[in-house]
Image (cartoon, rainbow, N blue to C red; front, side, top):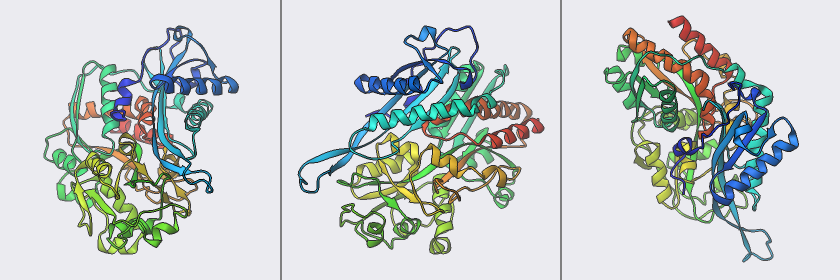
Amino acid sequence: MFSGLVGIAWLLGLAVATTESHITSLSQVRKLYVEALGEGKLGDEFRARVVARLRKDGRFDPIDTPAQADAVMSGTAEIWITGYVARNPRAPATTEPIYSGFLSARVTSKDNEVVWSYLVTPRKFAWGGIVHDLADNLASKLLEARTENRDAAMAGGPPGTAATIMHGAGATFPAPLYQMWFQSFQEQRPNASIRYDGVGSEAGIRLLTDGKVDFAASDMPISDQRMRQLGAHLDHFASALGAVVPIYNLAGVARPLNFTPETLAEIYLGEIKRWSDPKIRASNRGVALPDSDIVVFHRSDGSGTTFVWSDFLSKVSPEWKSTVGRGSELKWAVGNGAERNEGVALMVHDTSNSIGYVEMTFALQHQLSFGAVRNASGQFVRADLSSVTAAAANAAASMGSDFRVSITNAPGTGAYPVASFTWLIFSREADPARKAAMVELLQWILTDGQKECSELGYAPLPRELANRELEALNVGN
């Protein structure tokens, strides 16, 4: 098993072509060399399928050697079996596997600058065909991105020269992304040194207000009332988008489950106790659910992931809102606690008949099944980059000048309902050198960094929002 999605960023091949032009956006790429997208035969199969799709379309010229290329696509993939089903009801003993997995890729210029990245999961769950499904999905997203020319509008500025030594702490929700981002930033700026500790949103905020770190990361915006209590004015800057997904461990259940918001609330309120409950079966017709007790897991530490989860449940369940409410630390009606996203993922992975909630990257990292959730439009939607992006489609219009907004249960077709921005937070009272270093880091994240986040399963910010934040940083200087 691949050790984790955070490893993707380090293992992607970064060999690039030598051409005379300086490639800064996907729109400048014509000649593209595609490496094996993964290891062994599987990586070669992915490569062949993507190359075939690109050649048929004609917007890229896939070539055979990296030396002649404008840019190089590299990547990795994982495929696993979630279970077996009988295709022929007359021969139930004859079963075939159901697959899940992901394909992650990046396109890199000759200067090792990432101009595009993406992670795709299966668009449909069927017998076989997953290689074509993932490869075709990736090729489609690459072609869409070239047409939209988003990358050209998000071009970053030149590297700074000032020394940057910073220490941050907070949310585990975006920790894989921040670890990759900070390494990329340091590679481009030899004077930079950034350390990040994924200790949970609450702990990160406490460390920031105690003056023990330079910035915090949180999946919950800090309210004005909380800032008054803390005695600090803290600036929020959204950095990326992610999804909290319901993960579960059910032997013999191969297809992804559907969850209504009411069902999730009642499971975590302790009112639905067994997997065979009629309310779960009603949205999963034809699925053989076990008549077993549901083992519930939740976060035990102060968690922005818990805030997102409870913020969603508070919007869809009056009972949840009145009895539990939203927050980073809750008085749980049922369940067992585990620390951090990693801890919940491990507990669900190791416990039969269990359910939990984690950021999507951790579900993929541990090859865990996660369900679709019914959204405000009545659709059962599974988390992926497209559905998370759809949830943020109207966020910029409703977001104030301080960039704090909730997008759980967002309206719109195809929107995943348990999506959230994640924020980097720092104090306006920081000394000028620290503030300047933070501004430089944020400017990079809002430009070059946005091109890198999708390969780990995080969606980039809407362009309008990223531009607004860049303007705010310039004004703040």
